[in-house]
Image (cartoon, rainbow, N blue to C red; front, side, top):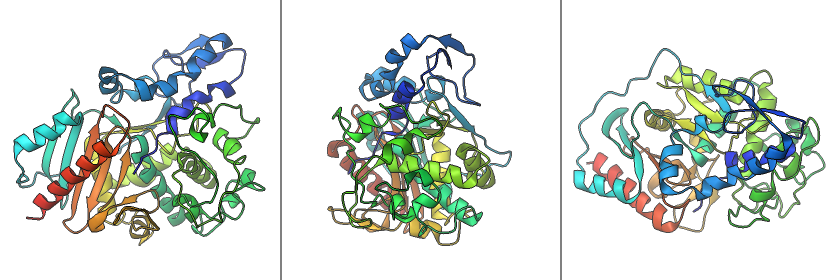
Amino acid sequence: MRAGLLGGIAAIVMLAGCAAETQTVSPQGYPVAKDAVVSTAMTVAPGDMARMQQVGSEILFWDQPTRERNFRNMEKIFPGYVVEAGSRVKALPAGVPLPVDGATIDAYMKANNVAGLIVLQDGRVRLERYGLGFGREGRWTSFSVAKSFTSTLVGAAIKDGFIQSVDEPVTRYIPELAGSGYDGVTIAQLLTMTSGVKWNESYTDPNSDVARMYATPAPAGMDATVAYMRTLPRETTPGEKFVYKTGETNLIGVLVSNAIGDRSIATYLSEKIWKPYGMEADAFWMTDPSGQEVSGCCLSVSLRDYARMGQFALEGGAGLVPEGWIAEATRAHVTLNAAGFGYGYQWWTYPGEMYGGQGIFGQSITVDPKTRTVVAIVSAWPRATGTDLTMPRLKFVSELMAAAGQ
């Protein structure tokens, strides 16, 4: 099972579409979006833009020390918006320590370059460990764990009346897709990545859609994701085939943004989940150079707030999304080849009724409704993904869940 990347990495390559005589950029060389989290700005000539186009893809090839340093400092490198926390924090009181051998935990963390591990049961902390110089006060990038946050905003927008139903056509909210492969595709099919639109998510193929999505400037006034996605051909009838497409999660972000109309989706996330649920720290959401949040990727969140997001799901959305939304979002709408694995509304489903979000390089939130347990892990794996990395994690998390159930 592969967790997608595209998001901010490919989005940063969109600099080719920012043609102008000069650009206002951050000290690291990235265009500054409105309210971007940068301390100062400088001017760069157009001739420097070609060099900047390559920076996003380099994330895949950072060496280990660079990964460990930068995954907790993405806001110092890339532009983005703050997701503000409120004054009320949802308490995570200490629980009885989990009956798991400390040496086993230390061995897993060391072998898998884990920066943070937390286990909640019934909202109480039964295990919390940090490594790689990371700590409770820091933020760590999500990669595709962000997808589960983005899909939850669709639920919030339905509760608020901005979106009527997941059965509505995508083109109702993104009219620029009319006449494309997305004609007749519903929001639900976008959420489950069953649009039927052809897509190549390969990170090693320079001609893949992931690599090419931001290579061509978008027409004036059109979102770059929309400009590319509307050029893609229809492969199958909508609803028939699951194909993992980070570009479609980016479309979900555009759809929510168009639906709510008057604020960024980072602000909407703050208003609908971060503040009312009681997240304890501000988050950071990377933007592409046009200022749109990269909704398929690239939230930077504290470990405890990742765990709170799992707890939020375990509690059925705590009244902040429509009743039944989380249950619908976290059930398997798509059954994958491996027994017990599936995909919901941007949530993965696992054997034993567990579900979760996951991102490359070892980021995950896993929820077990049976034991009322949440496990959140942030890491800096030596490679983006692979069964030799994902399967040991699933085994380790399952052992933690089993210990919680004793």
